Image (tube, rainbow, N blue to C red; front, side):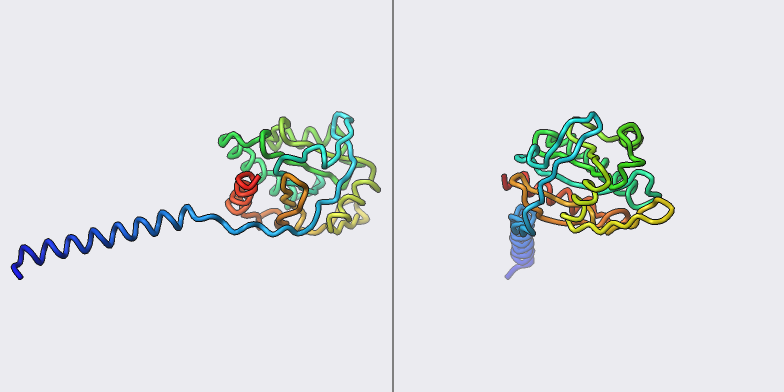
Length: 204
């Protein structure tokens, strides 16, 4: 076999290998993600938004929802969680999913301090877009009951602050099933959350 034929055969082998690699990479990137497990039905609730309107979880059925429990005087985990959610909000707006297919909800478990004015001011500072982000409050008993129904353990300390479960961020599908519970604060993985939100939107 001449040198020219050997060289041609080698180039052909390399080309075939590259094509095979490209095809494999394409199918790997575009493969369907496995379905997200359904943890349980999200407990419905009746609370009030900062304008005094009555809101139930079922009012937002048909949308993928991210539900956050917080208190606005929290020094670390809560504002970091909201900050990350705002980053997610901005990406979802760019992808035209915000409001049309995805909504966020935030429930305070410190309604005595988090009055409508305080809660709204917190949202303004953080950059929340209220077109698809609802701030929810109620009596201490009501908000504590909602948190408890979601498995969020909350304890009010003598100084008026709170300690609470750090897994207090819930991904809820359009028919009201909890599909994932995320850690809050620095442990949040925005890429993971965004990927799961997109997956639930696709699966509608």
